[in-house]
Length: 454
Image (cartoon, rainbow, N blue to C red; front, side, top):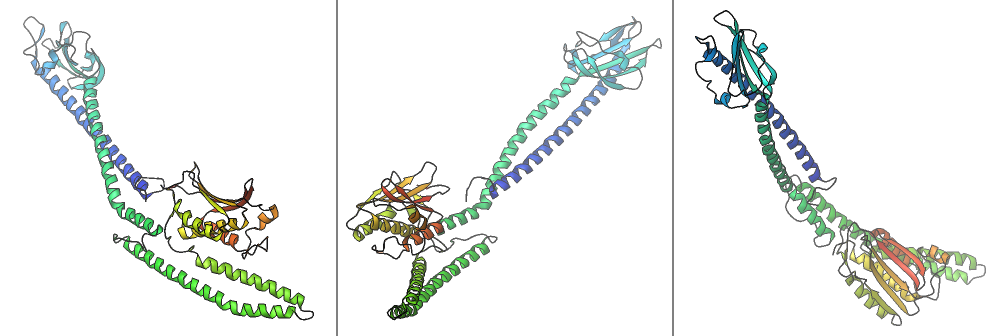
């Protein structure tokens, strides 16, 4: 089991779910926090401006000279800093306007202050859009005195923006931490499945007879059922092989009697044709029995493989046996930099496949048989057995894998080798083809795995 989130994996599904949950949660926190903070800051600003405009009304008076003045400066010193964004203004008809020291340019619109009730709006101030509060009060001559105070909107935006940036950075950090924690939780939670994957790998490589280890309560019943199935399947296959072998052997005696009687029938007058039919059918039955016995002896169909195929070690004992079996032929191994390659195939079946092909090549070769291993750039693997014999015709190639196909009765054999080889290749997921080459007949076995391990 891959420890990385790959398409279709539980890790990817859990990671996507956690990511969605974190994004939604962080997004909800961000929107709600910014909204609540903005609301409270705006309320605070409006309360502060309302307090300051009331304070301005209390401190303002008309002096003996008839001019407007303050008994003392406002309590907030920002109204004394030039273009600080905090401004006030007092105006009355036929009196000189009084403005804050911060207002070195521009004026405030006195029309906002047209009622004894405090009103507010967003107007253009000396340094940009400003939140403006104002009200009116009657002067000594019953004239309206306009009290206006303003704060730049940019000040409010700056506070909200600064909070939003800090909050965003903090929430991004929180999101990364939550995702990392989620990955750790996923790895911890799926660790038993990783151990199960390792146990299955050991089972496939023949390093174990069942799934080893202790697993959580949710997985333990599955592991127990799989182990029971593996042992039951192995016992059933073993019994089936014994039964198939017993059946084949029990058929040999009556088959031998039929063959003997058919041969005697052929010696009588008029019995040659019936004898020939009986003998042909008896040979076909014997070939089928031999074929099924050979397949029963192979390991294909076992619930797990004995060992992976390792190159070129798998071929060395086979070549030594072929040299003894065909002492007049020269067997050559060409690895083509495939040393150390491991194939996820059953070693017994693959060895038997190579043995059949090499033995067949040894029978038909003139002098030399080559076994070539080729590792392709696309991670496929090819084993090629080439003999320097006369090759086959197109018709012979089309029938070469049929049971009982023998093109030279002088050669030893039953005509089952290539049929068994094709059956083994199909069971292993390999492709087996025969073709004529300039060097002779070539049997090519191709393997296209997802990966080749070194």
